[in-house]
Image (tube, rainbow, N blue to C red; front, top):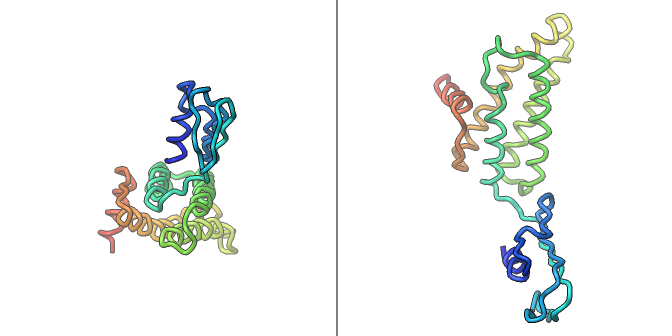
Length: 189
């Protein structure tokens, strides 16, 4: 925040987003300081007419922010709450793969060993287990698609309580379909 304020202070063009790299959350300003705006930045005198380059380390998200991002993403995953008759095995597979990739991305943002990282790891493990289930030897005789849908119940039984816990622990709320599955799980237990 301090770096953002410095950039805005010395950005005389009025363009507050000049030089902001949204992908890496680095603030960079290469604007020429006007003649009557000498300054001290990071303990160094900056003379008028010189370029100023300010880099800030990427902003670390809090676990609550990561939990919110997770809940927003999971709210749109029908694989967590649709009835079996509404599920198409190929779509289930694609959705589970998307969830695994997203969880890996979020895990890189968490503090190693944190409760949230352990929860994300457990969900990712459940995803992997569901995908593996359709390739077990009994799946060939039972039918791969049936095995996948059969494993969906176990997957939900593993994942829904973890998501409910994350929702409660970090004060992030799910939309109605996912929230209803939280309630169904609590009533079934």
